[in-house]
Length: 421
Picture (cartoon, helix red, strand yellow):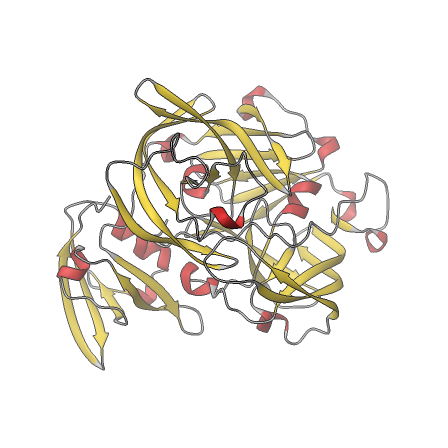
């Protein structure tokens, strides 16, 4: 959970490269695409959840362990930090351009063929990857831990993938070995279009009015719900109260827009109230997605993490089972007015990147560029950026004391958390 919402999907230049080998007794060395070593039928992989993003440890060839964001719809394995593979002898074949949401232009990258990915018993042989020329996205600064890349579609297309946000594990099962049982949760159909999973199981409820929403289920986004009004302004009016915000980053740069609260959302038979929703500007979003006319928005992990979610791309359905403890949590935004960036070797040095005008932090005198040292007598080096955002998103009326370093001098700021939206 964080103030700066991350959107990393929607690669528009090409489809996925590989698929799993059919279920045969084939030696591991002769297999292509994603598979489980030793002809296993399933496996579990632990993950970390940072800023509502699923971080998977991966090795490429003989690299050190890298951290990749698991994104349901990103069509290719993208290395966003080229320095992570600087010691690897990669077989580059061509240059490509990447495009996605955001207000910037295209990114340039190179395709490297015939690589191996591994994590636990999961393998991918002869796998093509896309390596950005420069780490222009700087995902690590916003997530607060080193982030080296993004992957997803090939994994979801090869296995039935269950994401358990309570145990922080994903379970991979070969599709021909998976069987749905009602105790797993409620089943809803999905449509796979341009490598992304769409569902029609979501409905916006405003009083007696209901509006069906076709949305992408997007594990590469940290927000709860994003709605694109550029093509649906009448059916999706803005809430009465909104704030301007930097909603996140796409492959083409910053996504600006507005945030507000919706009365109620129905996801299948499950209802959630007072939902925080993001409304991106057309420049950052709608004009980049002209080939998806039925798409209204996307659902991110701030909402999905309230469920145990199973994706079955082969049979085109999802299974959702609510996690009772998390379902009780309210949807909250930062109550201080600061946005943070992480720097340093392990991204444990935090700077204030932006202060919202008129917010508690602004009125307390905090400014962009301040280095955060302590929060409530706790050294921030002992905290993750997610820990800091959680503290600033909970407890309206709670007193917060920050010690910052500015121009080599220490300064103290004291304020009371206040719900901004």
